[in-house]
Length: 107
Image (cartoon, rainbow, N blue to C red; front, top):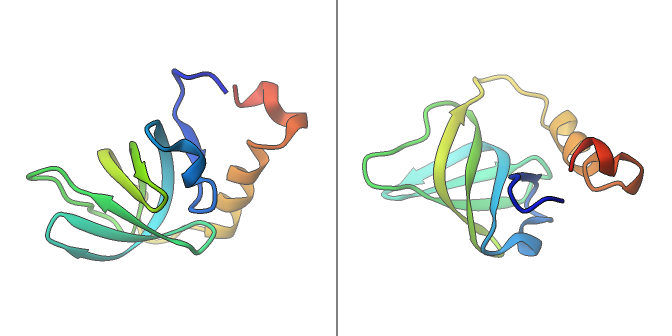
């Protein structure tokens, strides 16, 4: 995939993108100080480091940020996706982007 794109990932795929900018959809489980914990589309937990003065608004959010380590993303932008989202559908879409036969659609 091109380096100038932000790849959509789930928690399983996160370790492959350390140092890169990604998009991850998740359900906000808790926010403690500058750390939000999200349940990703594949049901794994991901920590999101929130910049000063920023928070996550909705129950479901799309995170655009840089991967710090296997389970942590530093937030650049959070997009409120509301309170009702089919996470299985989201995860299916994420996994399709990694299938060879769909490579041209997502790169």
